[in-house]
Image 1 (cartoon, rainbow, N blue to C red):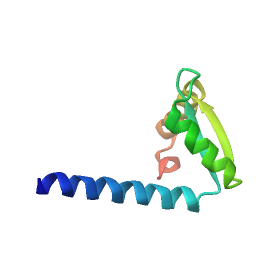
Image 2: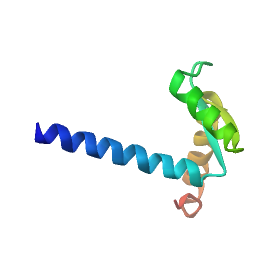
Image 3: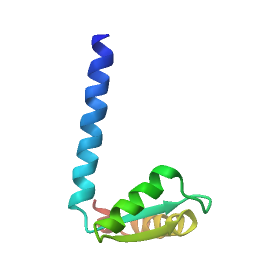
Length: 83
C-alpha cells in the first residue's frame, strides 16, 4: 500500500511539473504521427490556445529530415553538434 501511495505522489508531482513547464512556454509543438491527434493532445492544444500560446505542428517525416540533416552536419564537423 505504501509503495502505491508513493507512486501516486510521484505521478502527481510529475504532472504538476509538466503543467508548470506548459505555463512557462511561449508555444507548444505537436509532433503529428499518422495524421491524427488523441484526446490528451487535443486537450493540450485547447489549453495552449486558451492561454494564447502558439501551437506549431511538425510531421514525423519532417522531423526525421531535420534529424538526418543534423547528423550529417555532425559527421562533417563535431563542433557543430554541441547540445
